[in-house]
Every structure is written in C-alpha cells, then in structure tokens.
Amino acid sequence: MSGRFITFEGIDGAGKTTHIDALAAWMRQHGHDVVLTREPGGTPLAERLRELFLHDEMDALTEALLVFAARRDHLRQCIEPALARGATVICDRFTDATFAYQGSGRGFDLGLLGQLETWVQQGRQPDLTLWFDIDAHEAARRRAAARQPDRLERLDVAFFERVREGYRLRQHEAPGRITRIDATFPREIVWQQVEHEVERRGWW
Image 1 (tube, rainbow, N blue to C red):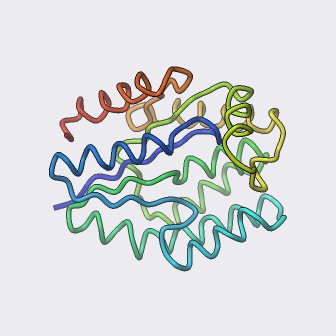
Image 2: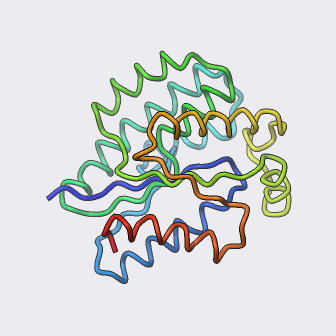
Image 3: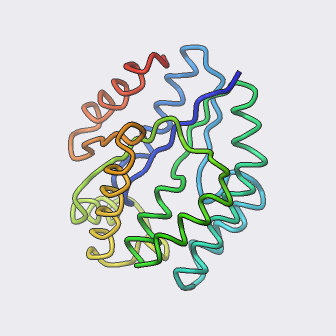
C-alpha cells in the first residue's frame, strides 16, 4: 500500500512550520503512521548538506546541485521507504522550493532545474502541496521578530517577491497538486484552511 506525500511550501516567515507540526499531530490522532521531515535534510547526509547550504556562500548552480544531492538521499533513505510501507510523509519544503528560490529568486535556468528534477525524483511528486502565501514585507517583519536570519533569510525583500512569484507560477502549472493557503490570517484561520484541504481528500 502506497502512502501519501504532503509538502508545505512558502517564503520564509509565512508561518508554515507551526502548521506542519499541528497536521502531523492531528493525523496521528486519526491513526496515521506519520513521518515528519524537511528539506534540505531528513537524513544524516542531507542534514550535513543543509548546514553547508544555509551558511556557506555559493552561487545558484551550486545551491541547486547541493539541494538535489540532498534530495536524492532523502528520497532513497527516508521518503520512498516510508511511502512504501503506507505511511504519510509530511515534508517541510520539496522541489517547489528549488524552483521558487533558485529558479525565480536567483534567476537560475528553469529548464535545467526541470532536468535535475527528472533525474533525481524519477517521477515522484507530492500528492498534496500546501503553499503558504504571504506578502514579502509581512514575511520579513515576522522573520525579524522570530529569529536570527540564515544566509538566504538575509536577502532583500525584492528577492522574496521573486520567490513568491515563483511559487505562484508553480501553482499555476500544477493546480491539482498545489493549494494556496492564505497565510495572512490569524493562526486559527490558517489552520482551518489546512484542515479543510486534507479533509476534502478524505485523508483524516
């Protein structure tokens, strides 16, 4: 029995992390075997690559290659085995983030990213992607109030506006998979949107 693969996406500061934990807890309460993971990361190798990605300066091509290398190990060691046993995998970011950040944000070749996506994923895509959409200025305000920024979070608002547009493009290309969550509302209203999207698919 194949499990379900749910990803959470959005620019830094959109508030998705809180709802990832809430969804995992909610689905476990409903009897699901849930694997909660993240990208870059999710395996010992991918976590080491994550540290390089977040803190070492590099160009867009290096970023893309590093992320896809981590993703390959993540798929082989964590995601695919969990789905094969029927678990629900909930992942904080996946390939949509690469297209949004390295593609639209950094201006990297989308065609090449598509080729890497094909090689690394071999057809694997999430069953549902929840895109937490928020204005880039509001996201910046939230980030400043919440934590010390990493290498990417220190980039300017214009960068995050391009990233947001990248997510909008991905949603336009895959409307059946990617659902926009309006992240400007209070937490309780945002959670209701998340819950609705999962319930309407009969996954509770």
